[in-house]
Image (cartoon, rainbow, N blue to C red):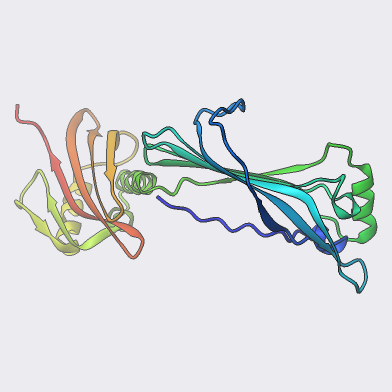
Length: 272
């Protein structure tokens, strides 16, 4: 999985009080490999930058170099888990008008799951007077905004698809039961026919099921759902709890135009 984030240096406070243009200038840093910061994953590479600011209080631009810094860090355990961190911050002791603004973004990827966290210094002033008053009042404290992003990994997309599908079946919602199935779906069901091909035949299997199942809680519950997902093809299997009975479920999926579709579905009961 790959996610790309674009960070811009323009915030409302900066446009009211001063236009801060972060131009990141590389600084050579040698890493010894030792790191006393409290992170689980060891540092693989790290790059540091200094910030150049430009201010236009009236009609003339004023530039000042080295008013802040940035750090990009990649961490890895060498076994597939990794994280990326971006920290951009101004130094109020060096920045024009003592601007104190920063942002932090971190993404950690492990086992097909991704967790993203973003934190930034909040600024929502509506006038120069309000902005300057806040700058004067700030002394190391302030309001912070936290941003989290949903897990958009292939595995999580499929898990959501499966949970939505099972919920639709419990509600006897035919539209929901058919949603996100490929037009050429192939179904191996417990009752005849031996196989059903295409959405029209697939729909008939649910007409039979809904006619003999009252729906509601316990009528179609997924348990022990296991998912294996690549970039374009995936499969999953689970156990089905249908009131007091247990069945087996296997699904084959493929991704088309960025959307996962169920291409094969197999329900079965063990022989007794």
